[in-house]
Image (cartoon, rainbow, N blue to C red):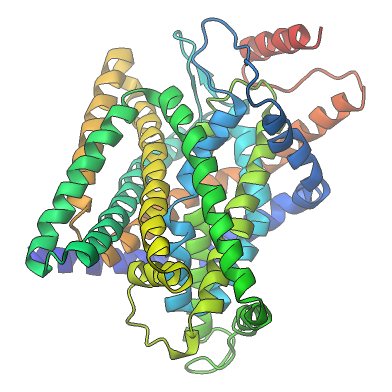
Length: 504
């Protein structure tokens, strides 16, 4: 078994070094820059509009009954957003940020911000294309994602299948990481309280894995509607609780905030790298860990969260695109930044040896700031963050599986999806006891592989993103132009009629 794991580690390390080498990092930044230019930096120009069109009206509508079109299996814009952000706001926002600082230094946080700045317009573009190219089946359920706009937009069906396969692998990898962090966090807390001992920890983790698998399986079987409903309840609760605790911790260490930002910016460009020069090892690690963890956290460029957004009831691609702008901002600039500031104002980073585990360090940050209450609360927050991510990625993998096996017909698709769900749940149990570093690295590799075909499509369809965006804002100005709501004439006509009904 050890020999097998060693072989997997070496193979994954080789692929990871290629996937997260300079060419792909440049591709991620370059795609974000291209989309920013083509949309005239929409993430800046329409930043206020993204709030005014998404989260603000949603908060105002809480408690009001939402009307849905009969015969459609859709979710509200907020439920689609909650399902999507439950896939992005996970342990990557806490443990992932800690891991990035431990391995890449405080400067990695700066590169997470850079990836997020361009990621806002990247995620916007994914959502716009996702809704424009989504399909509607006879049961009234929408399916969309990068594989759809690659196959039907670029018309490269082979690359669409490649993207779907990578999505399935990424779903399994992401689930593995989240499950591993749940078992690591809960078993660590339980061991502190009951002192199980090293020999019994494996059994404890296995039991935790089984419990997580059973609960996840019950929710996953309910599809996007159940996932969206559960996520819309858990995500706001978890996020507000974490932000409240983080804000308190940072304020109590207000005298160190300036120093924390100084470390972030001071280490972002590490010129004292081994071998010298801007592309020295230390500098490369800082960027690599920052970019990898940034993409791992907000998922902009992967083409993953768009799968959940595509199930939204909205007819306007741009409207759901604006949720993507808010999503990345909230994920990285708020949640990840709070985590970084908690760590940098609480822990002496210069004294770290590099051997501290990311999970243990994350728990220590909560413990240092809040004592026993912090340990208990983190033991609730971290598993819930991870659990909602597991739910979201099960849906992503399900849709990718359905796309891959569409050639089998409707019955074959359904069977393949059931097989994927069973495999997904079984691997949740296995992931609870596997070495965490290997899971992180495999998931990083899968994410990078998933990003490549998606980024190629975003570049090729960047002009269409601008056309759809311009069409929407032209109509908002009162200009009489035919709405661009779907790539398929029959759906475009249907959506146009729906908008006319809504505007009466």
